[in-house]
Length: 74
Image (tube, rainbow, N blue to C red; front, side, top):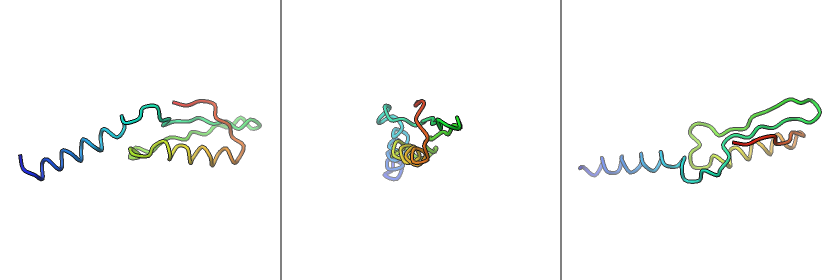
């Protein structure tokens, strides 16, 4: 096998396994405003493999500042 093939395979495995590194991370959080009953979803983007939980948590914090409360996670 050529060195470039080995490197490409290694990068592919590293990227695709990033999703499974920490399955306890929430990739979807549903929030609801207690007064208006409006709901919002915070979820990681398709390519947020390495820091999906941080992306979701940043979204959650933004909505919580506006009065939304978490109602469910996945």
